[in-house]
Image 1 (cartoon, rainbow, N blue to C red):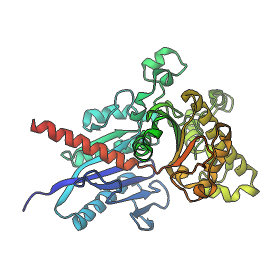
Image 2 (image 1 turned 90 degrees about the vertical axis):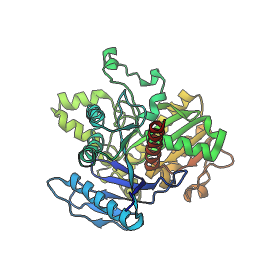
Image 3 (image 1 turned 180 degrees about the vertical axis):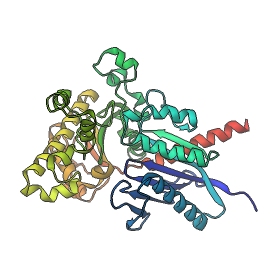
Image 4 (image 1 turned 45 degrees about the horizontal axis):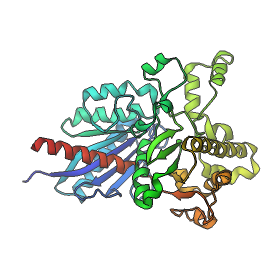
Length: 408
């Protein structure tokens, strides 16, 4: 029997309570933007975990309560094996690509994982506690069980390596900078895909003063010049910048000192609050999801306040980035809220009317690729992001380079 042809790339995007996965066919060139298959395990640490595959409704999933994350990963591995056997007979996995949130001040490009790199990346867990440990847990499990299978880490911080030093600095004693305490920026896989997709769709027009708004449960803005990151709202951690679903965004550190010194909150209590109890959820007391909040807005003052601050913070930060860029040529909305919530897009754009931003209400309602009106001085676009594809693309390129090196 002939050996399997290994030309499939599996992407794993591991969060604290979910694992998204996508399978790409690297035998097709260029690499298809849509995966051959994919899905998600959601609510891993909750009471009712769910499993969903491409084109199917979520289904309940029973997980081992003692090790639910390992159980979820094993379920995905089993389903991937079954899918490949049924639909890709005679083929195998060439590599697994992992979205790793933090590459620190050392990793600016995709890297093949081994024990030494894994140890390095574990030292960055305190910088991204919601995501870093879970991606590394999946990598460690696979390194032990399938050491021969290439695993590639791609970093959310890498795209912001082009930030000028003045944007990376924090106004702390310089010794903090020397220890790696600096602004890194996040959502880099999304912004990297935006840079590629906007160049394809708009050509030279995208290479001017562009701001991309990645608005999901986590949210940030990236100012681009020539499609390179020159400023961004997330900094040292994924808590900075915009108000988010459950995260606070930029916050006066004096408020934290007050909570700890006067109210006697512990470090653990404050950390949990900042990541899980703030933002839209904290202010509204109802939900972190704007889809659930908007219908309640008219009769709930706290919901009104939460949504008003959410929009205001986006408008304020866009204004600040416009000052850095010296103006604005293009504004792009992406990620779950940015791509699908026309109401919040309209409110943000209303707040930017002073810049000459004007949108076409009908185009915005149908989530058209371009929603700016003919009178707008700024092009306003809606562009779906594709973080999993970027990860697969990097893994394919890294493997091709390794093969080429081996044939020299």
